[in-house]
Image 1 (cartoon, rainbow, N blue to C red):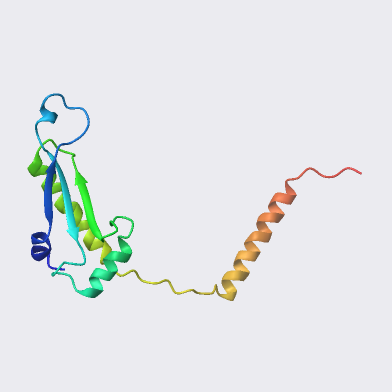
Image 2: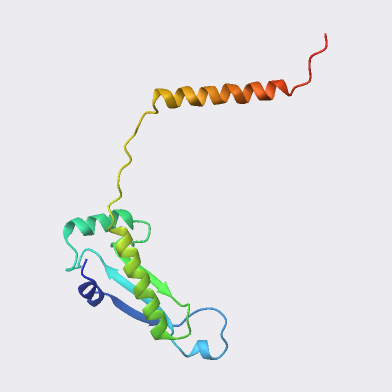
Length: 134
């Protein structure tokens, strides 16, 4: 993954942030909206694009565009920095190939030990019961 080329393909848009803030919030566009078009990216190969489509399918639009918002700070530049770092983390996590778990069988000794421990525990519990009076 080439971070420089990917960061050139990002598009940022400044929008007015919602919520409380008084007069200042009504005239300043501090919220940043980042968009990244996965299919038209030149810095990712076809395999990486498919992997991102699968791993980020809940975050993508119908046109397979990743959209992220950030309005944590009152500063537009700080929000741009935060959203860029978040984007790079999401992309790098999405490109990781997960190792598949090999199914294994417990050993005979392990099964035997578990059953012995289970019967000892059951014996301990039954010895604590009140005796039945007939």
